[in-house]
Length: 163
Image (cartoon, rainbow, N blue to C red; front, side, top):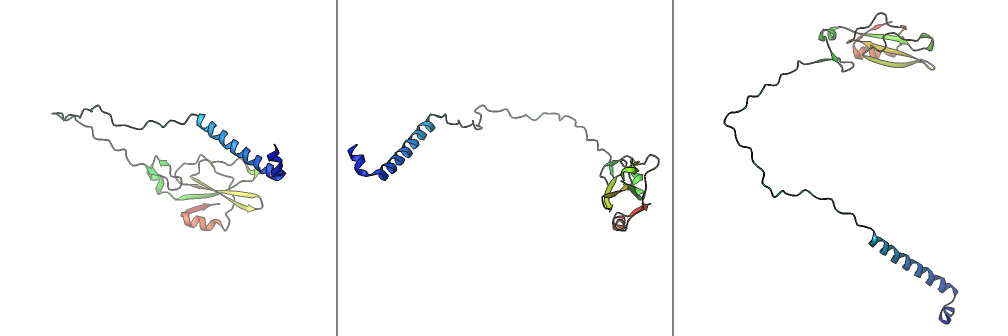
């Protein structure tokens, strides 16, 4: 005790802090050694049992030739299969359909092969539905006028605009 008083108060605090760090480290080592170590997973090993090799048979078994399915025509707009490839020879129709809440419900919009939505005024939008591979059921609409920014789209897709 006499010796601690002779060291001074600051040195006692430093010595105590060092002692705490050493004790904490020792406790950590003891706890780490007590925790079970993960066991390595068994690796694939070579089987000491010899495997039998297939023997060549005297008479080969007849094999059936695979039957090839006829190529399915695909719609160029949607990528879906088409039952009648002659539908692809038709001209694609582009119909501008109103999306205003008062003009709903739109007819045959779900039967379109491709649908674009474009802004026309403020928050109002219009759909442009493209029909090529699917038959429409009756009238489609409500049909609205086309806009100048649709011209590039119509020319790129080679369509006949309906409005």
